[in-house]
Image (cartoon, rainbow, N blue to C red; front, top):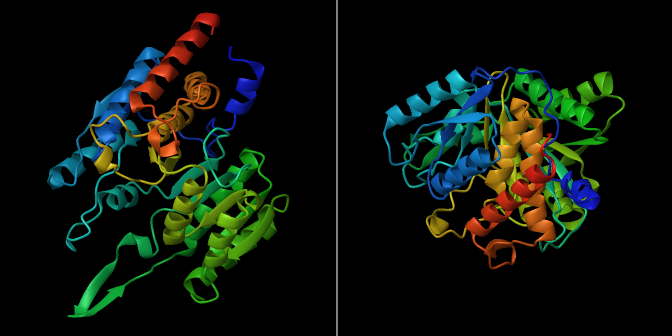
Length: 370
C-alpha cells in the first residue's frame, strides 16, 4: 500500500458517502454499463483518459458512448437521454451553450431537468501542493439543480422588455434541504449553511429559508444550522472559507458560489461535480467548463475528470477501485508534484495520467490479494 501518511492525506479527496439507496439499472456479469457523453472542448480526450484508467485497473465498468454536442441536432439529445435512462449512470464532458442564439436551449440544463437530477454536489478541498491564497478548506456545496432563475424560463413580452421567471416550490426546496442534512449526517459533518437572498426576494427565497429552517429545527437538531445572505456568503468565502462545512443553496446562487469555491482551491481543473436524482446520476467537472481553448493540446488538467470518474465508482459501489484511483492521483499531485500549467507546473495531461497509472500499478503489485 501507499505510505501511512499518503493514505491519511488521500482521504481528503476520496469521494464521500452519497446519501440514499439507489440501484444502478444496468449490471451484467458483475460489470456496470454507464453512458459516456464526451461533449465539447476537452471532453472527448478526457473521456479517453478515463477509459484507459478504468481498463488499466480492471474497474468493472463498460462504457456506452453517445455523442452530444452543441453542433449536432436534436436527435443526439434524445439518444443521450435514452442511454442514461437505460443505464442509470453517465459521465460527461460539458456541452457548449450558444450565448448568441436566444433559441438555443442549454443541453446541460435540459439534461438535468428531464432526468430530474435535483442535487448538484461539489467537494472543494485544499490540495497542499497546489498554490492557493487559503489553506485548510474543506467545503461541500449542494445546489438545487432543477428550478429557479437558472431554469431559463424567459421571454420578450414586447421588443426591449424581457421577463425572466423564477419559480420555486416547497417540494423541491424540501428535497434539496433534506439532501444537505442527510449528506452532513452520513459524512460526519457538523454544520449546514443555507445561502439565500430572502431580504430582497422575500417570497421565493423567503420560502427557501423558512422550509430549511423548519426542517433543521424539527429533524436535525444535532447538526448546527445557519443562514447567510448570498452577497455576504461570497465575501466570507474569499476572506475566511474555513468557516464553512456544508453549504446549500438555490440554483443560480449555487452556480456562482460553486465557481468561487473551485477558484479558492486551485481552479476549474481540480474539482468534480455530481448530479444526483432519485433514479439517475450524471458525473462531470465541477465548473462545467468546456475548455475549448485547450482542446487537443494535452495541456488541460485531468484531475477534475478523474475525480468525477471516482465519484461515479463510489456511486456504483465500486469502493476499492474508487479509492485506488483517488489515492494514486493524490500521490501524483502531492508526493510527486505532477502539476499542469493551470496550477503552476509544466507537466502535460498525459504526464498526470501516466503517473497515476504507475501509482496504480505499484499499489496492485504490492497488494495482489486485494
